Length: 286
Image (cartoon, rainbow, N blue to C red; front, top):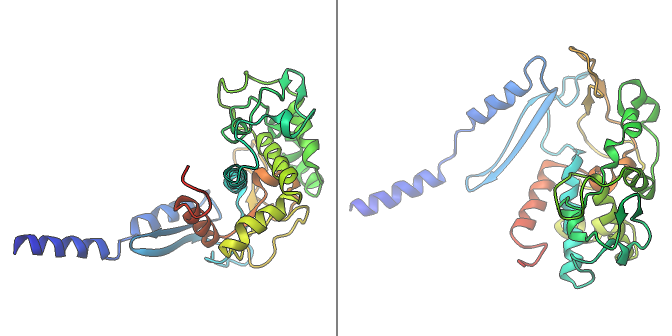
């Protein structure tokens, strides 16, 4: 009898709707005066789904955040890019220990770089030693304050940004240390294009977006606006002021981020993508 009761009690505790009030308080604190304009969290667990939000999606209208809204996902893009590379590896179309010189001959060379010594694996795990083009001083200044408004619609080719990264010598020999670098993922995406024969956006759509039914996920290319319902995006534009001005930075050409940070998505689509990835539906276990 005791054992039976214990089992029922455990089952009831497992299926009971959890109290999300503590998580909601965290969201509320994040959007307190001086904090973020808006924030969302999408929880999926054994208790079901819960969407929480605080603040607004548009400071001008005061509209609340919505579960279906699209937003720029930044470097979460890299998980999509890595998945595409790993799919090609699983299909035997590339090897993770293949070198840059094998797939992009002559692109990674000079200034201390040797494409024969840098592998695809090292691109994905940021141990290649290749400098992050985004940290180039001249390039970075284009995103600060008023300069951002002058350059927000600039278009960059992947090869152009890779050259900016390679203009700074490597910090270490391949495999010897870790250095987070968007340049790595631009190189990885060019390899995806070379193998598939199409654009990176095509590979993303055909191999992940359509199979998973991701209705709000896409790579905008040079298009500066966000299609469909979306939240506004706000930034201090790296201002160093104690009380910096907040700018609406929603519209921008994100070719500067591309396969390292350019994807637009929704919380629901990200849940479906990571769920499929971690449950083994996108890649074989090995």
